[in-house]
Image (cartoon, rainbow, N blue to C red):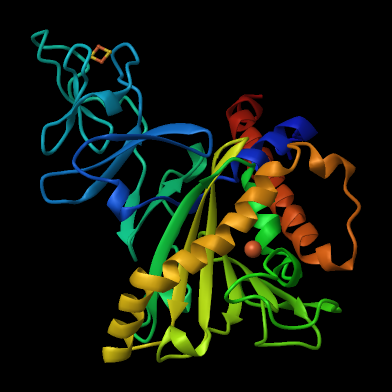
Length: 351
Ligand code: FES
Ligand SMILES: [Fe+2]
């Protein structure tokens, strides 16, 4: 078997930019129009746009001619045209036309990476695969994403911190009672707790041993083709209208090493007229309150030194986040080792 040595720096870099071979939300639906949108996600420059039917496409944001950003070009309905010299590229990464030259050999060739993508629950999900996984795995949706019983509202924001810090924050239920002590939804409950870990099919639940359904009492880490975080149902006050507690399905997508985009779907098991009431109240009143809470998270995280992790002292409440960090590290190691072994395979076979 190939002996593949992966440097700790390479693993650290892969973790910092997010492991590959997963689906990641890259934008909210409303952020993507027919105007090509250049984005950086997982350290990769991509361009996302809608064709004439409204279907979303995503390719590498690099013109195969001389490298201008395709996101600066034109949407021709079924392809993009580069602003610089007009080369036309489809959503499959294939050059469709080179209007400045007749019979250009670029035509018909797949010259840039194309990314599988789909739209769901007002979010746009993109598959980031390595060379061995260009075809996507299935994203098995969490219940809130596929059942009609649930209603969900997406809020998304850019945070100036590494994505793992944002994941750490969600994996840390205890911060609710402190950081969000003055908030509409997280002020209740004990300020001291013992924590425990319970395994699930897709990850694990990390939560308070002796308090449930009072505050941010547990958090679930899931990996079902995408990494997701399910926050325990939080109590809404009476004035939040009919329906029970609200939950949060969270995703954090790396932009680069120092920036990420958070996606939080506020979920509630409400149907029919109650759903309409909730959506109405959400837009008119509750959303602002939710943003206030998120701002508290953002301010603390952005205020932390990028190297804060090098000097931290973790205690029992940090077991959940430490576990996720280990999972991410193992995933990055396995991915890099797999890639390196594969790159070495033909040489080994030739001996
Ligand atoms: S760089 Fe895009 S057409 Fe020349
Ligand atoms: Fe928070």
